[in-house]
Every structure is written in structure tokens, then in C-alpha cells.
Length: 308
Ligand SMILES: Cc1ncc(COP(=O)(O)O)c(C=O)c1O
Image (tube, rainbow, N blue to C red; front, side, top):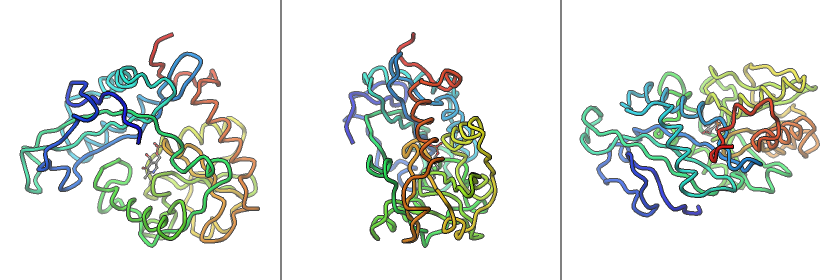
């Protein structure tokens, strides 16, 4: 992680090294927080944040779902994120991490009385699954852990506590020599990767699990669906079995951090011919152009940080 200069914390820009919390913060003990992951990219008109409003809307909805009081509106959080990118002079693009979490005031499970804190940080961050992975594809395997389900937590919100589930899956996969874990839901259908949504391609038709199967309603997922449909590719949102990945011609993962990363192998079986396929490459290119402001029809998805 490359530190930047300042972090926005509870209304103030503070030096990176001073953005600290108390050890008795509620969220540190019980995972009572909600976060976002957002990227900004360099464009001809300066850095632009991709789908910032949608990310902040999801953050606000997540806080509501988990009952975390939040005084800031999505619009205010949008402005704060812009100021963090600007103040850190992150002209070559960056990753932006907003977090709402409960602090001091309650150490019991009832969070009433714990103060809400809000922070927004940003720093330079390259390819989450590696440049090599983006180009040639990564190796994945199904996790022995099942994705959190609607009966126990809220899979459609980025609640910090829920990420222990993703951490177990990711660490298990990496320790076994794979780059990413694919997670099934409690019914045995594909949910998603530990931090990405999944697209599976067979005979030119693209399928991705519905949000009701327990995946996050990913913003990159939505962007990929939009791009694919605009290219005339049929996209279905329907349940996928584990074996569907064994039969697939192509599989790719999408997420703000991972962007569009091909999966070249699953459970030690090559996917297709073991190389990124044509639809995957098309989405990669379109997405890369889109986030860098090269497709004018999607300009409304970009927030230019330095004006025109
Ligand atoms: C579990 C999980 N699924 C999917 C995604 C992709 O979502 P998005 O495209 O909104 O970043 C993420 C990343 O935020 C994630 O953590």
C-alpha cells in the first residue's frame, strides 16, 4: 500500500499517519461497519472517479440495512471523495475507500450509544489480482466455505463483519496456490468470487448469478452487463452450478478492485483453451476505455475531479 498525504476523518482532512481509532471501538470488536471500494482513473480531462454516486448510494443503503446511523447524505459523501482525490493529488488514478463504522460508547452487542465515524481514504493501487492475471488469466478454485446467506447477514451490503467470510475463502485459496476463491451459496449455486462477481460464457451467451443467489450487487457487474448488451451479446441473470464453470468456454471476474480479470482455470481444469477468450477480451477493452473516459455515451458515469 502506497500511503497518500491525507485522509478525511469525521469532517477533517488529517495526515495519513494520524487517522487513528480507539481500541475499544465497537467495529473493531464486532465488525459493525460498512465500506465501499471505488476507483478513479486518469482521463484526458484529469482524474475521474467511476460511478461515484452509485457507490455512495450503496454505502448509505448498507448503513440503513445494518442500522448504522449516518449523518451524511450520499451527495455529501460524493463531494468528500472528490476532495480526498484532489487533496492527495492522485492524478494517475487511485483506489478510494470510504468506511462508516461504530466507535466508542458501547461495548455490548447492542450498538446503541456507540458514535458513528466516517472516513474516506485514497491511495495508488494497481491491479488487485496482478497485471499478469489481468493479461493471461488467474487460477481459481471453489472454496470449502459457503458465501454468507440472506438468513444470517445481508450479502447485498458491504458490511465489514461479513468480510470474515471472504477472508477465510481468499486465504484458503491463496495458501493452496490459487489466486482466487469462488464461492457457492448455501444451496450449492455459484454466488461470486471472494471479492468479485462472476460471468460465465457458453456458446456466446453470458450468464451471471442473480443477486438473490447471494452475490453483491456489484457496480462493475452492472457496468459489464450494460457493455455486453450494447455489444449485442445476450446476458442472462440465472443460477449457475459448480459444474457450469467446468463446461464454460470462458469465465471472467469483475469488481472495482479486480476490474475485469479472466479465469483461466477452475479446480485444476482449464477453462476453454486455458486462455482469455474473445468475449472476455472485449469486455476488458470496453471497460478499460469506459473508465478512462473514451466512450462518450457513458460520460455520466464519470466524476471529473478537476472540472473541465
Ligand atoms: C464480495 C464482493 N463481490 C463483488 C464485488 C464487486 O463489486 P463492485 O463491482 O461494486 O466493486 C466486491 C467488491 O466490492 C465484493 O467485495
